[in-house]
Amino acid sequence: MARYVIAPIKDFEATDRMIVTVAGRSIGVFRIKGEFFAVRNQCPHAGGPLCQGELGGIVRSSLPGEFDYSRRGEFVRCPWHSWEFDLRTGQSWFDPDKVRVRSYEAAVLGGEDVLACDVKEIEREGRQPGPYTVETYPISIHDDYVVVDV
Image (cartoon, rainbow, N blue to C red; front, side, top):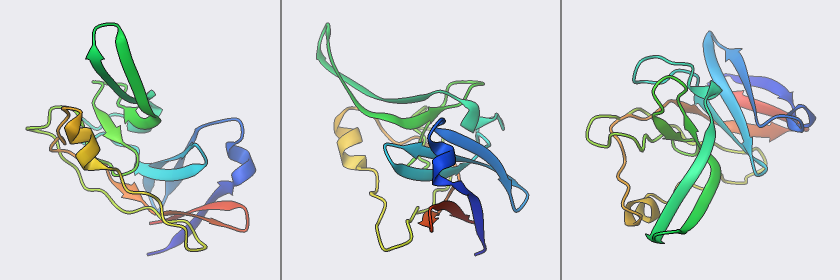
């Protein structure tokens, strides 16, 4: 796997994402609450520009008018058809019987592990993994630069 420098960390101070071309692939690099994630900028459903979509989280409700919003900003929604993908795993949470794509682990240099998505928690909320997963790429920080491995 080759390593590519994306940008200095300071370049992410004014934005939550950058879309770059690495090894001929369009990749979205996201900074969410200090963690970095990289996913392929192509929705597996219809090839839409996935990483240009809105970021969101999980809304839970046990009673009308009451809700809990968690994992804010950790899901990207395709701007073409609103299919959602978990930035941590690449897993689809839309149309669970038909939508699935491949995911990859993300890592940070220096030995810090990126936490994996707690799939069991999401399933307890009544959501089921979809059949698609978007491609993800390992991210690391090296001398204050964001680096992606492709």
